[in-house]
Image (tube, rainbow over all chains, first blue to last red; front, side, top):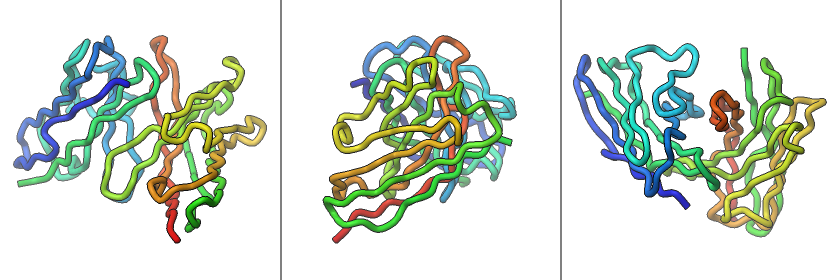
Length: 107
Length: 123
């Protein structure tokens, strides 16, 4: 199975800060990586697929990059509505696997 | 508007059975692969399994932790997805989400998710 490791597991940043979350795969997954946002008590929302392509309707303050084993999600200017847990997921091979999540809070 | 609405969760004893449903609307359900993903309380997301679309003969994939205990099925005429769970264990306690998967690049990735239905396995 491909293991997905996210870091950090949590972070606290100020409004307007640039925030970066990292996801590492235990083996190469080309660009078969997605990012999701999950707010408390809600189902996940798809943000990015193919490592860097924004889902329809997702604001451009979110961006993704990477290929192979190392990937990043960046929020260009953190806003209160971005408070959530962010998950990465690989879909290169079965079983599909997720990172452990990164909880983003406002400082 | 795309909607995925799960139902059927509840309290069940260890060793018991439960059937979850997911009602889909707002998209061409029959064209999509459909998945179940779960989240234990306070934990991360765990993929449960997938049923492919009609073009892929409704074939299925499962996580090792549920294989031979859970069965995923679908009824394209009703835009409905199902998860039949048997031999339930306490570690199956989780919120269960259904998700649609689409293909835009040769790979199938999640695009929409439901709000979840809670399954609690306890004596």
